[in-house]
Image 1: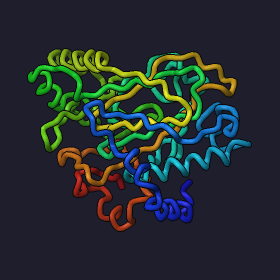
Image 2: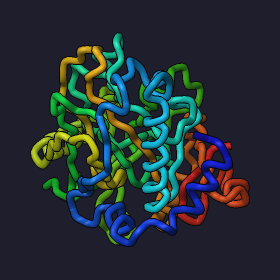
Image 3: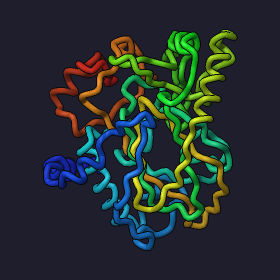
Image 4: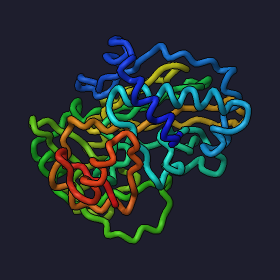
Length: 320
């Protein structure tokens, strides 16, 4: 999927998409921070069994159909913004496969199943995290729900919002990036405010060492968690449905389920999308990102060179 010729074709064909498609993949404009788009043609029989691990998703008889859907998703994602990947996650693939994997049932990652995947900001640990997430359903026979909660629907006191906007504890990379990071872990705010004064969120309780927080912050964080649970929606995506999630506003997770590992389990695909028009905060520019590198083939090479290791005009950081 990193074939330069294929990526060039995707970039050149985006303008051919009809206005109705372009409108459908615009970032969610409501306080919910999420929307479900329907109508992507998906034939269950074409994809073969749900792979046992993300690495097997592009192999075997289903490889062509899986790749075709990857291309369709990248077209849609490029229409919305700039698709990108992470060098340290799924070998830098631009389209990630989310499937349950044996031995990972209880961990906090997309490969889990039997445990609740805690609501979280995708890649909350990194300043260059996605602004927009695209989650497409290939298979979900058990109607496993994805949870979605928006910081703009919670009810917190001004005091709690102020407390949560103070850098207090770090957010660490999740297990899908490996372990053994030697970079320092800077304290980060949980609640941020955009240029309009509206709250945004960097939230990942499973990878936030809350035991190191002071009691006032911990109590405010607990109230935020309770509010996110109160306003939670839980759509069970059907094949061909796309969940578009504003990653600055809404957190997402997944309810527990029993994986069978028989080729019929839930199978989603995910694309991270950067929105060039959306500004990141200047104070995020000093973050080290734990050495995780962005793979951004749709960004002009001159832009990547200029941005490498420093803040761009939107305040985001690309690690060298």
